[in-house]
Image (cartoon, rainbow, N blue to C red; front, side):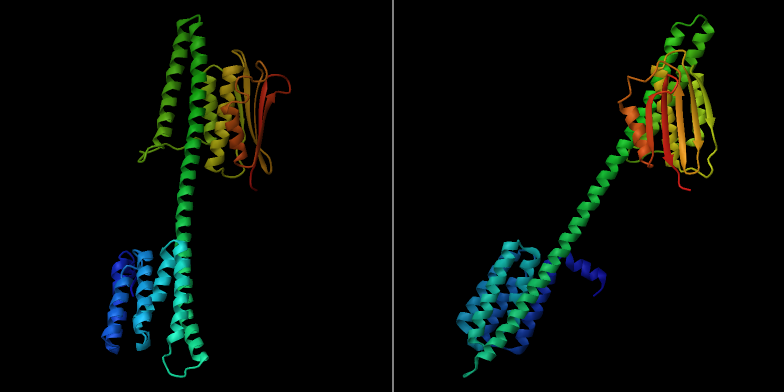
Length: 372
């Protein structure tokens, strides 16, 4: 049977079961068992048509018809359609509730015992003959029950895998949204800190030129923040448009220049990496530097100076951001920014320390292992 035919029949259980029932009934018709037995053959095959669609009702009908057959014409012989009993056992084990499966198994075994009392209908048949018949029929019953149980287990396993797949997809979506929220926080916090600093400086500026420069910086920072915000929000759409690349290690120099243009005296020591750096690690370094400089702008004071060092040891990246401002940052020490920096470092097996600097001010020091 081709895979297409098998799939088609699986979607139409009544058609498949009708085919099995007609086949069994046709075999009985060829054997010509007599009108009384053919009546029961017709009734049994009719009950089989719904064995998968309504397994409990089908099994109950099979039990009732088989018992009536035993009471009325048991001495007349067996039918090919008596295979309806193990087939009904299989259907309840595979598709019906477990209580129905156990009940049908018990009823079928009871029927085997009753059948063994009257079959074989030979005068003087010994106990061994009846026992052999009972064992053979019980074998069919247990085979149907076991195969049905295996089918149920396979379908439950498939369903469990589908649920697991859906849960993994939901977790992946949640993790991605969390990452986007963290990126949004970094972008907005950094940009607002620069805007506020420039707005305060421009307000107290002594010359129109300084005020104009502050306004230009505010405009440029706002446009850049709007562009990054749109890019991040585009990730949340079902069909995002073309997206710009995420910032990386090479963009740290541009970031420092932007902060310097905003009025903060900051120096940069950026050592070239000994080997190409992955985009994920480059983004983590960029965001740590961005959050650290944002905190300097917000908390260190107007005359603070800062320095950024990115160094590469034999097996680790060392990142240090220090300033000589007012000391340990209080406003964001336990906020989302510092937590985000710790999470970014931890994602690559690194650690990060924030606190007072060795000679005053504030220091952020991160160590991130780098595969050799």
